[in-house]
Amino acid sequence: MVEVVKAISKNALGAVNVVGDDTKLIGIVTDGDLRRTIEKTEPSGLSSLTASDMMTAGPITAFPEMLAFDALKLMEERPSQISVLPVVDGDGKSVGLLRLHDVVRSGL
Image 1 (cartoon, helix red, strand yellow):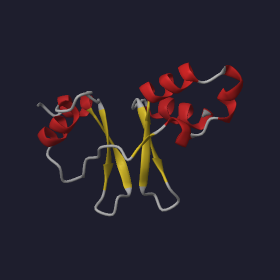
Image 2 (image 1 turned 90 degrees about the vertical axis):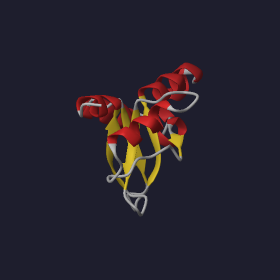
Image 3 (image 1 turned 30 degrees about the horizontal axis):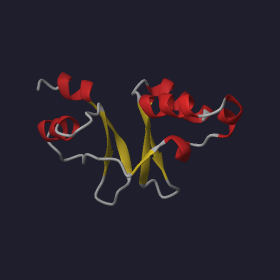
Image 4 (image 1 turned 45 degrees about the vertical axis):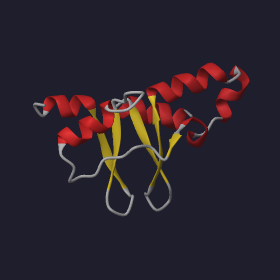
């Protein structure tokens, strides 16, 4: 858990991708995931939490070739809006995170 918090804080993205040894995306931990996990975990169990305990497995993803508009639609056209998308290549390997702020900054 400490590594997840450090990674989220260091990169100031509001989330961190969780990858396997092959760098394929297996999940994402967002600020919200972290807060919800802490709320439902007894204080004595916090130190044993792992990324897999907190992550959203198999998250919605974007691809490097995707238009910003299409990524924005993925974020907004759903029952629960999201503000960050993992970006994966054609093999499912993690290549980054796209934030709603990045899309807005692009001029959309």
